[in-house]
Figure 1 (cartoon, helix red, strand yellow):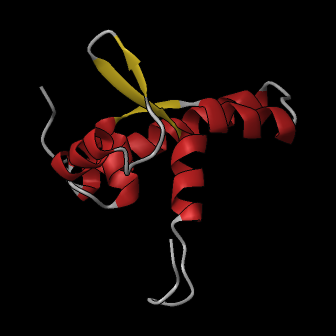
Figure 2 (cartoon, one colour; figure 1 turned 45 degrees about the vertical axis):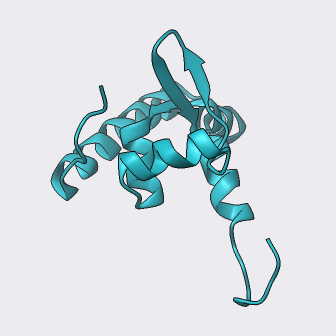
Length: 102
């Protein structure tokens, strides 16, 4: 069962947790290349993905069903996205004009 959309404060709290993890990696002396790879492969759930994309969880689920959303991983009953896949999807969705073909 999907969680309800988080408030802005809750979303910021979740982002701060991620940033704390990255700072911990940096404190251990990890290189920027390693940190970038950790970020790209970091798994997020559909709630976090919907927050990043500024969509409701239901819309994200519909996009997933239609094959219009970012790549996802299905693990048992859980759906997860990597940050890299979400960021790639957002980048590819960029357009310079409304008449530009997708």
